[in-house]
Image 1: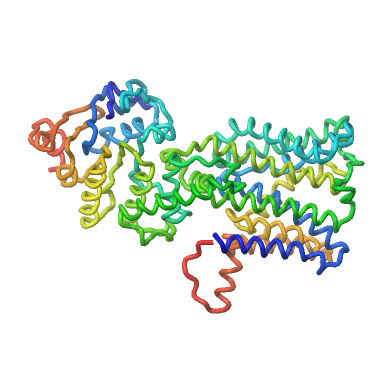
Image 2: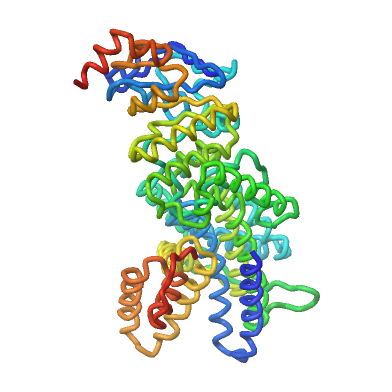
Length: 319
Length: 251
């Protein structure tokens, strides 16, 4: 318990010190995206890694949060701080209602249904152009402001986004190690046994689906207010798959794993930029190798590799 | 304690259970036996809310619970174990039993995520309670092992510990001795008697006749979806019908 707390404090300190090291510049912008993607990966991991329910449409909830925030603050001139929770509540309610029929499905059927859901959202973003601006996007979304400070630079946004990301991490870490987190993992391992022990699996799955959508919506709102411009291409099927990849590469059922996965998949295209057209090949190859040799994800694979290299005998890995 | 009356279950055109009725007295160990395909497991699945029956009622402590989902039956203090143990393999032994305390705790999703003060004391209570049941079943030294890595016999004990953590008034065990060696089966017999001594009613489906005759207070015999006989182990052993339909088939 204490060790977990210290780990989180240490991680937070590193996050807060990072801008000193990078001294502003382009890297800060990338790290803002690492923060947003970490939130999204955690949201999907709660659903996939903990409860064992797949979603191939999570970019849709991300987009919904972004567009709701964007439309409320531009067309209706609402304060962004008010628009964000309103968007999150709306998306949460929607996910809750969708969740009941959709989460009755299992395995491939659930994957197909959520895939369809994501596609529906994507089409809505494109087609309701009188609200969303259609394919040409929605611009002029205001920055967030707090006590006279406008979050209008990468460094300021870094602190803003990471304050939210750390809060989402702490929230999820608490949840994962609690009674409810155990019930989620129980449903993942054996739904029928969990039910026999008194876990209302059906309700719990819908609840976690809604929570996951709410966190995704929050990340979407923050994305909209830091970018000030959004367009449907950011919220398509490709991004849903990218999120899924982050969760799997980082490590299913690990909150820090979600950060590692999000960081790797956000930084990798930047690092490989010098490789010109070959970057996508390196990128794909790396992913294949990762999945083949580190099926538990980075969060379990790196310590295992370290043990192997230092010749230390590793006991049972409970991470 | 538990009463089933007129239970009929039809799968497609096959009648798996045909008008089965019996009642189980509080504090007894009752065995449900019968040849393969007699409908024992189907009956268990109906009583515990996994299947819903074609006809008939299940009454638990005077309350009609027909069609109740398993999680609702757990709240009414009925729990079961499975023939092929259904452990939460990715969780530790202790965590498995802690899930068993689910109905005996109440912190909600938000309270847990925000780590409200009462969730911390409740978590401690859950952990202590779970440890108590690990001690009762004698696997406390395995608390930190992953459930998925346990040998089968220990897994069986874990499943029983987890069921007891629900603090049930009635436990149904589907072939608890299946896959156990003779040493483990002896331990199991002792354990089941100790569970009964806690005042918990036990119902078991079992193939191990020695175990059934040793520990059961009453026995219900099913054959081809019908109740064939009911009585004490002695009566069952002496029943010519049972011998011809069931025991006789083995020889």
